[in-house]
Length: 188
Image (cartoon, rainbow, N blue to C red):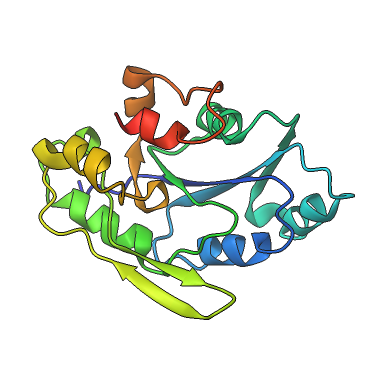
């Protein structure tokens, strides 16, 4: 049987009416079709703008709202709510290329025991004010060099990752005490 995992794309958002619609569209436009999309509103206080955008997508996404607690708590809620085998974190102000998930699943299909691997990739940083697109290439990263790469370069982006759900069962959830760097804390 071919490896065909369900992937949950999680979009945590706080006062994200400026970019949320584009992020959701990029999740919906994935070429991989075994997906669910969870939008977790982390207590936005923007007069309902963020909520209205998310709810405008109807049943094509699953929408949850919670009290503000920071991105860690929004991600943790998503881990609890997700039905997928893998989590893919998409920040509300980021975009996925249409083949992001399909390419990562294809990479996993080539591995023995794919559920024991986290996949991550190169990415681009787009400055919306200057329209400058800077590519970040991750050369020669292997599992033994991962921690060193995180510590020295700090260039592995959490939104490029495809993480098996079991990794959270084994390692625990994101630390809600951390308002920033919760991703790097988790990766370590």
